[in-house]
Length: 239
Image 1 (cartoon, rainbow, N blue to C red):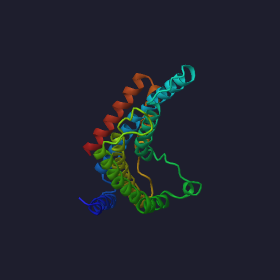
Image 2: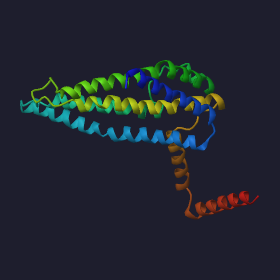
Image 3: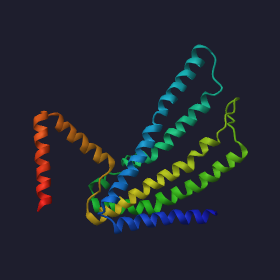
């Protein structure tokens, strides 16, 4: 499969996301799908965030061995940059799902939601997706060449293999693409409704507020409110 076909297929996914955002802007299934991708990106980001502990341990060991025992490791540098690269790469989609990437928003934050969405959608189409397409295609070739050569690190005598870590590049590119498609659907929905749809972080925050309020009430009050809400729902259905 040529690079042009791959790029064309990826561009087709973007078009499909735009169509879904336009045609099914109020569909509950689409809303759940968006939150499901948010959960996936969150799971990936939070899982690989634990590599910060391994990175800290490796740096601490290297510093102690070098400083106090004059016995620097021959693997410390490789382990450190591989772990840091893994952490940095897999955090990208998680940050995007939480709207956490840095932006110069002194003007952006004063815009209404519809105008924010229009600007975001334009920037996603002009810059984000072309960059992600190039990242995925070039990253795959980068990994493929490293795999064929069974590439090893040249920075330490032990020479650990590094092609598995280069394989992270196209994988992360796909995860970023998936989250980017979700953000495009959100932009289209915000343009149509004038309000940003919920993110997973919004849902989690609402759940925390509800739990905090529930904790302030006695079990009797909570049970009574639940019963009243259930009765109201049944009476509404009966009409």
